[in-house]
Length: 394
Image 1 (spheres, rainbow, N blue to C red):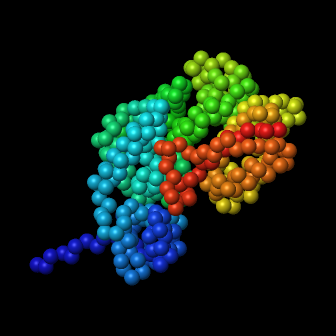
Image 2 (image 1 turned 60 degrees about the vertical axis):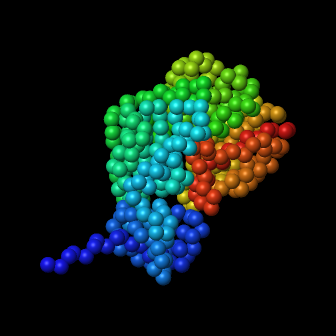
Image 3 (image 1 turned 90 degrees about the vertical axis):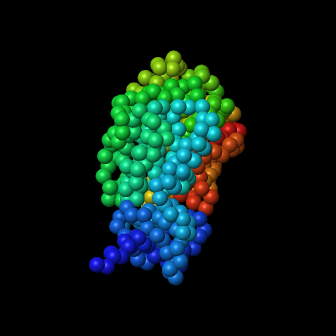
């Protein structure tokens, strides 16, 4: 009886353009540059050039426009030991950063060579997101590695994100290991936050703004206006530097959480209001109110290319109004987390707003997402958060 032939490894062949993209260091290959694929969604495939040369191994998706997410280069295998080593390296980096907080991002996808995998730590608990078919296939193994290396009290999957829909995956929020309580208390610097890991925005907190909040403290003074405040992270961090604080959010639940967090930290100077920031800024301008410090940290206005023009108008509107409300010598902290509006475009929008507001503005700092959310050179998709700290000259 003849022996069975060895199983054929899943393979994807890319175009010359796809090969150039991989050799240039970009981890994504789009579907248009995949010539053929002998694989199922979620497979780890051998990626080959048009001439058959091995280019590496990648996570394969049969649904997303991002068909391949590169894991290794050349002949290197993509075994479990690779995931173990890369996870250990990502964790070691965060420990070396000496972050003054009990919540941080442990794994930032492509920024840690673990494409489409997110792991955030909130004290004794971990929140994970598997954002592609391949990452979802690896999720049980990833959970095992996290338990092996970190021994968390619980691991929660926050899969209620659009990216999973594009991959044809479910949107469940569920505990994958241990148990995760409804609320978890974490510390950022001197401030404590009560965080809802099951339902909060992102994975519970906007961890990517942590270092920008710390930087803004050096400039904050007088009367502070914090727009799109969510649970008040900027307001709480800056409150002791200011006389009075007005924190705005459109969500009544978020406003209630600001009040809870302020009380937890013994801060009596924060007035939390439920309001649409666009309307509130116009109303305050008509009332001739003035603030010495203003923070604009809106949600992403441009979630795709089609929304860019509308997003530009939105960013210009809120910055123009804020500049009119800002007292001479005051500080504006303005942010955009829209990847499709890059730093140059955001800078131009803010400049145009200053012209229309007849405000002379000086940029004191240009900042980005926190260091535990690394940006990869040559991969602009990993640079999404822009933060300008500016002073009003007149």
